[in-house]
Image (cartoon, rainbow, N blue to C red):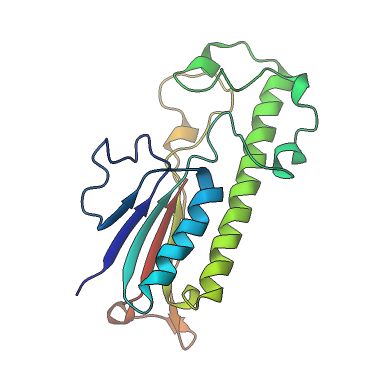
Length: 193
């Protein structure tokens, strides 16, 4: 047989409703952020055993208003009352229409940085779970994002932050060398944030 294919998403644009489920043998768009998705991802991957698989994992954790868990929520912004409330200002261009003070801009960056730190910690838990299950060494892992953030900069069309999409790729290795194409029958996991 071929690869088992699964997707765990936070819904919205990555939902069954938008047609994103097409081609996946297992699809779950019930969301819950990385707190819910990482344990489900590890469970799905462990259930594969030695069979090859592809998992698409998607989360909105690092999207405005950047809600995140402690200690990350206060790691960069100790006083949440000292800036504009982000909860009703995000999406649909609302931030671009505001006159933001320097303190508000700094808070946007601080909350974004907290979201990134939290997502990084969740990735660490995912990778540790893969190691514990004996899957990490044979996995091709691709971490990417759907867009950057302007973080309160004036909006004039598509900004350079929204155009930039970085990707981190970790390919499996065999005896200290990069695995050859025909040796890569393992687990493939993509995390999109």
